[in-house]
Image (cartoon, rainbow, N blue to C red):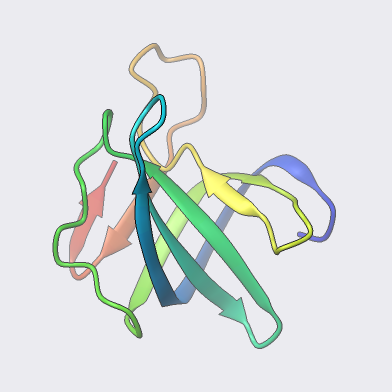
Length: 101
């Protein structure tokens, strides 16, 4: 995942920090996931398109599939939902026995 962008990734990681929602433009639920000892990723989950994870907690496991964009802080994964217009590959989050897409 180093310095690559616009690639679909699937991973499982530990939720390290829950951040405030991004409410500018499309609303996104945001949290940082540790995917390896030295790598964290920001997940930006569009809650205007997909359900919000209400029971999300730090130090719990999450599975995700979405589009990765590299940045110096570790990168961001977005498109963790179905594309209502059908132009983009569908993604998802799997948390606490429930799929969010």
